[in-house]
Image 1 (cartoon, rainbow, N blue to C red):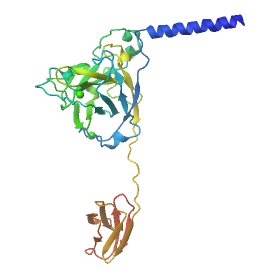
Image 2 (cartoon, rainbow, N blue to C red):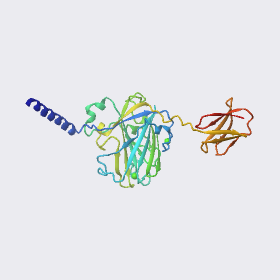
Image 3 (cartoon, helix red, strand yellow):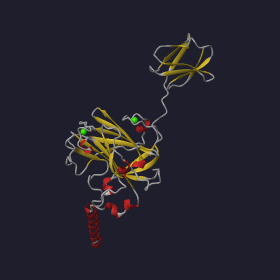
Image 4 (cartoon, rainbow, N blue to C red):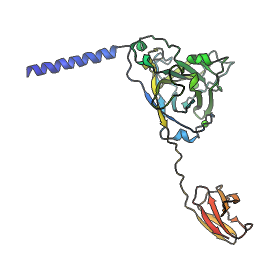
Length: 340
Ligand SMILES: [Ca+2]
Ligand SMILES: [Ca+2]
């Protein structure tokens, strides 16, 4: 009995010691985020509007940047109510992001007024390859500076494709311009949206991947947003997605992991087939249960389109059709035949 209790105490002490040493280790950070990023073949229009079906796919998970970064000018507070969330998808060549920002003080890019890129509302994207060094001890040394494999790319709100950044991406920026990168910001009530596409080539050196980022790969990633309230005083609040330490360049305290998945299921569901009724008499087709402005198209039995109209809520006159059988197609409803 006695030896057992000694064992329990010793084990507890050992566990306590190992917890202690883990917590005290400045080179290790466990609480980083991971995200799954799905592939798409959708056409995405970079316009600051998320009306593409892919942005509402259930596979595309919204991520929240809510860590108030250490060394934040606001000293750990978020008095402005600044908030940021984003979604991301990819294809063989590009990463696409849709970012929604709640920000009551819109301070857009203005070459005349701003004294630096960080004195406007901005979002920073961070990328770094995960290679054999990513798990080596040397990568976790405190104070490690980003090497050329890292890319930091800044989005200045209110601008259109202005580029500034550091690390690998900097090699691709010439006179504030970069090819393979486009973003559009759109001011909305209570804040703004940002839609971004950027070529993988400009942020991840192809020394680290075989030309394409493919299913099963992962990279280090972080997204940080900064709220300015005027052009003079810099950033008031900085929120990060994964990293919680603004100036520590330890890889796994700076980044989360972006895991590349296969094709996203699009949200295009089978359209609901409307329940409609029709009556065809005296050359007039009367429809009920059809929305105003619905397209109505009429085909003959050889498949030739013979009439097309936009439903106005009144009977459709088909007096000009010759006698015969016709197929009526009401958008989002089941086709039916009429006999004239
Ligand atoms: Ca769009
Ligand atoms: Ca602001």
